[in-house]
Length: 478
Image (tube, rainbow, N blue to C red):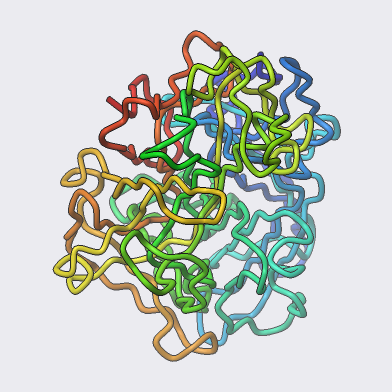
């Protein structure tokens, strides 16, 4: 399958950042000169393109249910909200804007670019007249990218208008019965020199034309498998299930208050989940009570249908004891992945989910609690085989962690805490903007390059943690 992309060049970044020159129009009436126009750039990390081609993949359906079907760093959402406040307390709102149809390539609401540092979509925002920012002041600019209708109909900066004072922390909560969705956020300090909006990405960085970057606020995981045994120890295999031992319900976008440190929004290895859930819905192997959460389930009878003796079990069409490409009854589970949202090679199965970040503490490590457990289930939901999933290179999969919390509740200010990396092979924290993969799935759908896990021989299951959805030419499982 080919990606549908706009042609983009790294040079567009230089053009963009130099777009605001010295010859700006000014209002010369009155005591102070004030520009009639200013610009800044807002970018969402990872290019977001709808794709077409290959096994009936339809761009029109991708936005309705975008699976984590690739290590390719794509994103698809329809709205991006911007708020600029004075960087002082109280923080007066001076600008507010929502861009519609952000990821739609047809209306040019945003444009893709690619550099050595990654892929993004961007838009140039133009301020005119009274919207222009003043010299001699600092401003905090916030951005949130989201899909309308997600997180219970969440709307960023709801009820806040220009002239109001902004003193809240933006969070989203997964509604009961709901699930985590892709969402982006970021912040930047702006100031004005010679009429030009400036910013910098770190305390030591050079000032540049105003640029604000939004990054994913959730993590993601997927599993990609083939040659699933029909029976294990005399029991028929009905499902595959990934179980997590912790689940947070609320995402903190950051300390969106008047005098927060903007550089906190640039930190890596961030854990920004809160409000832990206790309504366990499944059990780890060996437990008599529910003590885990189902991340995703792969219902094998929907991938290999036709078992007339028991419709809840898959049909091994060729009778060789394995569910794989030799079985001509294979199909994509269109309940989990509606037609047009994903394209897979014959004989493979797939499960995926976005996740809110969670912290595994020292007590969890000492108790040997696994972060993830992959299970094979029989038709009654009994665990007939399991793997405590390992994290590859857990010692270097990110050094220190940054924990974002709200100790005084959502009306309080965020607390930024540095945590040592205490991860083990099986007990590790989940950080935002990271993709945890069990074997590699390429969005390009070059089937000979896809590497699903062979579950007929798998003695160990290994996750690879891809920081910021980076594309890496590595085999995840061996």
